[in-house]
Length: 296
Image (tube, rainbow, N blue to C red; front, top):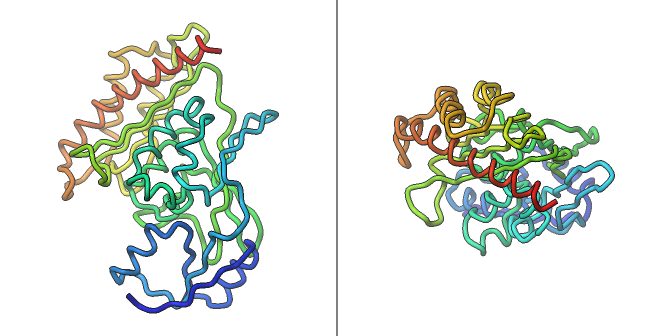
């Protein structure tokens, strides 16, 4: 592995200054579960690693009771999110995803921000956050900016982060009433591996607890970037959420996917499973919406 100098800033501005000073020869590192692997494999070779671990930041998801917004610090580990009772009970789609990322040891150090910035099509953390209409707060030399996570990913390994910018926070808007959600990581076996598909569903119901008021269907490893199946979402809105309507939504979503053959699965199987898993997660999201309403 190529030698590098490890820099330890204490503030965001100090980190940005270090990155700018050695422009082109630096790399940010937080948990390091992706960066260190790339270093060892020779895929990257920075002269300086700028650590973000010692910057004081939020270490637990925080719900603003006035606005209803959920704030998740980008340097927060997957394990911290997984162990949050707030996330588990009110945002189950996110809990479904983070509890299946790697091993407990990996989740203890890997950060949600790193999962997003790495921008691989199989990033489990991206799917639920897009389905929840999350926004990314990005801080850089020119200050803060917000961008919808649905537009954050540009291609495999590419995202909206520019130059010395740092992803600092994810903001999820207030959940609408009678909302349920679910995510599944589909792979060849129940073990630590990248998903063959990731499918996340969020449904908000009308007061009759049967009609779809809002739908979010988000797919991973079904295109070069995580994406929302907009046609399938539009089909569900205003319809009664049933096995039949979810089956049709799954077929539409499968048609919107751009799956391909890979070492983890062939395209035709992936496309078939999009339909199956959209229906399965839709039924689970429906059940969770109804249970949450009963428990309020």
